[in-house]
Length: 404
Image (cartoon, rainbow, N blue to C red; front, side, top):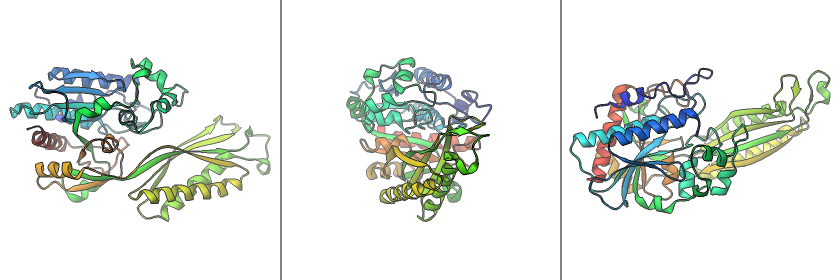
């Protein structure tokens, strides 16, 4: 195989383009995401890897020329789904780099002494069903299958129905201890989603930790009514109340250094231009390196939001959708990864990843590749071709040190 990392990415550059938002929209089980998964499976098959999709929709592609039992394997990979209007590299870079790393190991005449697998996890972004890293949460049992199957997307389709249409059996969805038992180490490469490598002047870094984060749905309830016949003094408008909640979020976060709090989705119901909404759903993302601070921030937001909406005659409810603690990646594996990459800096990340979920059950590590814009979850996300190749070479070096 002679494809560069950039060459591999160019093969999928048109898949899932969003002409309205810009960038790419590739929600799980969509036509675009299914096309990407088929592309990944085909690329694995072309490389002689034994590819299969498990009950949770995870693609596993095995390189095991010595015929060892599938235990203590080294696994690498990432995801292919995206946020709405996301960038080209968040997820696909890790999959393309894993494929390229296999090519590089073969060019070096490396014969793995332990099984090596490329893995692709579904619904990492949570853009369709609201829970990030859904595939890895199901695999590890961090999310009960019955809860996942009942999740609904914005159109009302359940995860169970969407999975069934994608060829999965809901009866097979859930914790998979047999699959976890195969993994001896998991290494995920990902585009950096901030300015760390720009400021360090380095193309590749090793992850030290992943900041804890969670998602909450806030529902503000008021009184739906007619926009033309209802005087301002007679209104219980949840949109006005929800706007104040957004300001509360920003104010509380600003009072706790190193907190990141975001309202990225705001949905009035029923959503008519000439209708006073009856309720507003908004989604809150909160992150902090100290889990106790995250909990404190959310508690304070809930308390102050209740006071803010009461002045508009509204009520507010807050429901946790997902939560992940701060993760310090496995020290022994991190040191081995760093040893294979002399001079690569250590870097903490504020983004969530499947590696952080898997770290609860198996030794996990991450590599980050420089993003010269420092912008992610946006069409402006970028990786230079040379840096993409450097990342794949670094991943190959790490994998060689682990499978040799």
